[in-house]
Image (cartoon, rainbow, N blue to C red):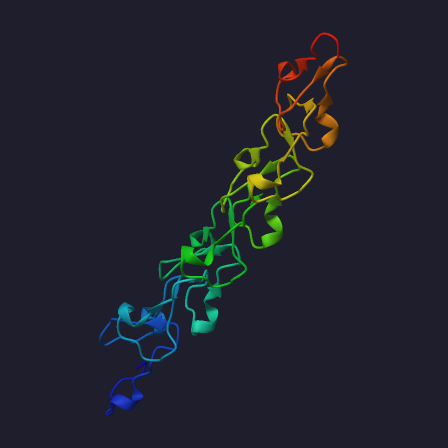
Length: 219
């Protein structure tokens, strides 16, 4: 109260929402203290800082003296927060490379989904499956959550694949009998070289020129 000689508690003025005061017998609103960043109070007359409520997981607030849960902002897609009372967007943790999340206000790393088989992503905090890049032709990946292109496995010499984003080694096609290829990660049948004149090859998927044998004398 700012008046003297008052006879009723009704004349004591309450702190507004977003504030608290632990002072007894206060004669000025200068004792009112803003709830800190990352917190809010949607009630009046708060007598302790503990009555300022923390923004929940997956949210943050940069404004002191916030009066509503609505002041708590969702962590952006591609990020999450497991803590309460966050006072900065930097408190929202980024999904790791090889993952992405389309959810806002996420409160767990489980919201970050793996890039699927045959793909990879070097991007931190990715917010879309579109950030997952396909393994190139001549390569494949049998795992999810790959982070770099090097996680894509090359088709072995003697095979080739024109498939982009392949998820199995079965996409690597062997060079036909009578040909060979020394190239790894080959993306075309053109890398399969025919055995030279006077030679033949019986094996498919040959990876060396010496797989071609000399024709016998008289043939």
